[in-house]
Length: 465
Image (cartoon, rainbow, N blue to C red; front, side, top):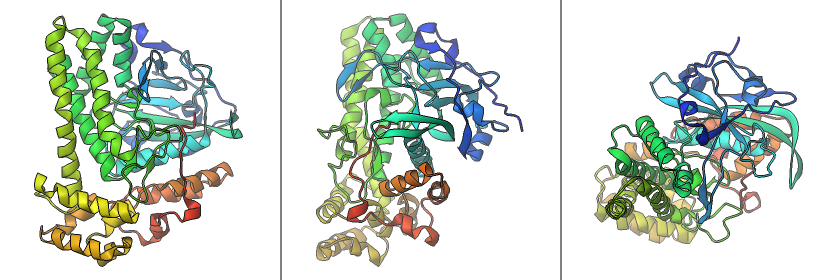
């Protein structure tokens, strides 16, 4: 069946300084590895064609381009980044009336590649496919994976020659804090105003001007980060170029879900100082919003008043984060009527988990059963805590809806990638099947719920660029 994508492009109508127009680089031998049929139907896509999703053929109606942006990377400002290995094919309006980007990752060099080859190897492509779809199934805002295609070409990295692949990513948009930063940094106020108007119309139509936009993005990011923490997720690279205006999770590079709980857990091999550790994520979210505020302030004639207004919005965000965190973790304990008085109860459990190295996911999933205490070495301490908790009358049905039984564990992802490199996609398919319904009980997937043994622990993850 021939491929039809109902493109309806808007970003391509913005001034040329927002992007560079170019086609993806064709590949040697496009072979479809994974195709998200349900998402394709949601996007109104009919048929499929691996040559399109590998970048070898530009479909009718596409307007391929690489987006320009800047960003703070580990706290240091980089004045120009941009899509160095990605091409936005275009946009569609899905069956829910929502506008969505369709982007190819690993589609060849662009003007923003900074000496890179613009390609991706199979491992990071399948990691993002699995983790982004798992995040969607968990109910947390995220980009989606539409397709993974093998290129038939090697990609050369420190490990040597690796099989190349292209990921098709779907997002509400790819607008980032860094998209605003580059125009503010350059003093291009007209472009900055055009971008703000576009972002408001596309993502936050109820926002009243740039300050309303800042407020809306702060609220979306607060909910997002609380969602991450409620499932033990560590993003790994919360740079401002990886922080979306829509409030979606984006760029699954050195990310991971925790096994044993620890506030200071870091997975990214390049995060030597723990800037983006699990427990630091709320603080970094606020920091990122302060950078967005700094950019948006440039749109106002009265800078002093703008600074005051933006400061008040950003300073309100820690409370937003705390409220969202309390709501999420209260639900994990079955407390539909959670209040600030319950915060010590939640924190005491997390402290017990950290002291005993209890598995984050399995502990919460078992809380309503006698098996929960098996996660702890100091069972007397847990029993004392559980007695306090039971007095709050936790609702089991709420806990079952908010505590996943299965997550994409790091060691399982690595095993899946190793198999895929050797040509075996069965572990990938099985993992995808299990993660599609993470809150359900599936005894067939009990092995995927098991934490890693000491020998199976994957201590660090990599960007894979």
